[in-house]
Image (cartoon, rainbow, N blue to C red):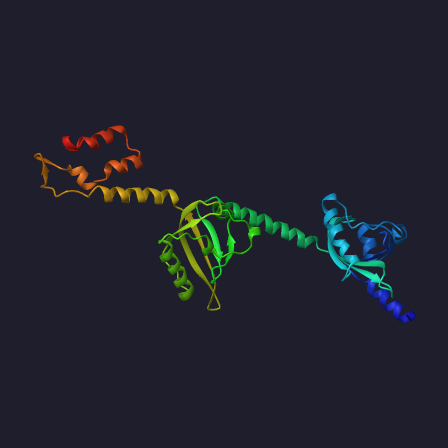
Length: 312
């Protein structure tokens, strides 16, 4: 290399704001640029031959060591992040390292360039904190949120809904239809989702019955809306509410209404007495509803006192 070319290369290296180092296989520094000296607050003479350790905390050591093993196999390169104590305090640097090979493809040294990403990491932490606060607010209500693609592949499932269905992020993307039972109520619900995807318009709320991975069956009330971007449906977003207990109560009342007719004609009598009183004609299932509404014993007694004697 000519003297002019060497001067040009040196100027390029020394004028960089990124930290540039070269170290041997023992981890000892062979070269550092001015930016590195300024960052660590030491001179070249003090740094020459010292150990270059891209680790300042044990919590990062295993991760960095694992990444740096990539320097000893193709493509002989890796990227690691390192928090180091600098003259300006703790800073985070992203290092891009590359092995230097001789003519025999033997590693002789390693060159690395480090860029200060402290501001980016701080912003990421702030965003993560806001996300956690938002998720806490979302998870505090009855609603459990989700999004899925137009082809029914899940995109986002809130933690409480994942817990209800027994699914985990590591399970990967699944079709939300995989959780549907064979209950007939799922047919109309699925049709509404398909209509929303086709029309781009919001459909009325509907119910679905789903099974969790551990075999539990739950009923959910679904409220959703298609998300449109540039005239195209990109996803379906919505929330569900667990109405399993409510559905059981409704089914019990429906069964009771089926077993006990609404009411006989007002002029129908048994042994000269009306079948039901005026109160029971208004609420023929009042005594069942009283159980669910937890009426007082006195109210229950009054209710049953209106029944004909031969029905008590």
